[in-house]
Length: 105
Image (cartoon, rainbow, N blue to C red; front, side, top):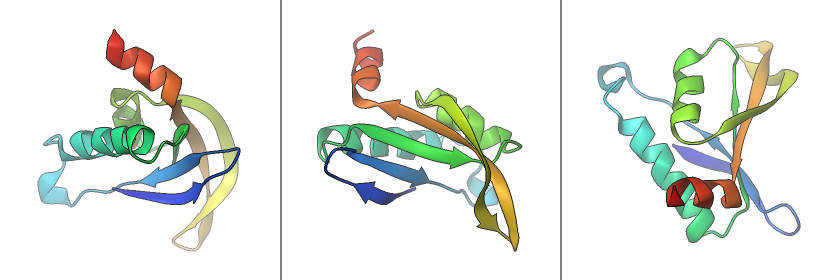
C-alpha cells in the first residue's frame, strides 16, 4: 500500500497504489491496509481526497475500492504505461466528508 503524488494547497489529495503477493491474496490484508491508509490520509495528513486508478478488468481491486468506501468517478483512456502498453483506468475516490459520514452511520 502506498500513497503517491500527494498534493497540497487547494487540492489536498493523494493517489493510492496497492498490490498483494499471491500467498496472501484474499486474507483481508489489503482491505485493512487501504482502510488504515485512508484514515491516516484524512486524520493525520489532513487530505481532502483519496484516489485510486484501477484497470477496468481488475475486479479484485475494484471490489477492494468499494469495500473501503471509494466510488467510481470516471474513466481515463490510456492513463498508465503498464508492461509497454498504455492502459485505460477507472478513477475511484472518496473525500473526507463522505468518509466521515460513512463512519458515523
